[in-house]
Image 1 (cartoon, rainbow, N blue to C red):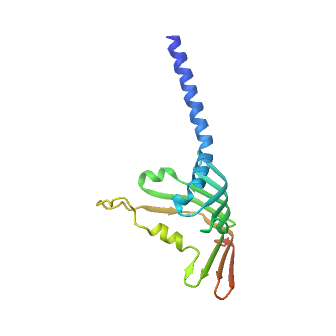
Image 2 (image 1 turned 180 degrees about the vertical axis):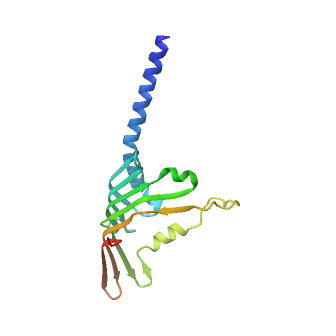
Image 3 (image 1 turned 120 degrees about the vertical axis):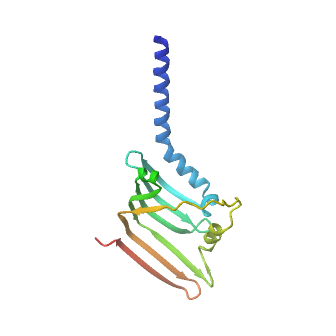
Amino acid sequence: MASKRKILKYTGIGLLVLIILTLILLPTLVKNYAINNSKELIGRQIDIDKLRFNYFTSTAKVYGFKMYEANDTDVFTSFDTLIVNTVPYKYLANIKALDRFYLQGLTVNVIKNGEAYNFDDLVAFHTAADSTAEDSEPEEVFKYILEDLALKDGTFNYYDAQIEDTIEKRILTWPVP
């Protein structure tokens, strides 16, 4: 009887250690998977400096994000900090709830060359027909709750290559406090 308790005790401790180790390593594994497979996932190469997830508050933090142009060298969009705080129990009621969405240091570079833009490949990638069969069942309607949305220190750059002119729009803080 005592040996069964010891086996159960050590098995339980081992499983607990394995679960904790998995939870600690999961953000790093997700970050590396997203970086290594970004071309297949979103159509462009990305880079992320740091990814953190707090399991108790359901908060995801992304630091140093960059999405590159189709040439994989120039930066299309980047940001310093993204903080997303979700409300996971709302998902049970089919409601997508963001308690906080904070984006700092966003930079977007849009380039127009004639009739083509530098994001045309992204539009084509995301509008391509799926190879999976369509379901005949109607999709359920999602409800959204968005609270505490903030953009700080954003810059939008628009460059027209034909006339060689750049328009830069800076957003210091949105919404204005």
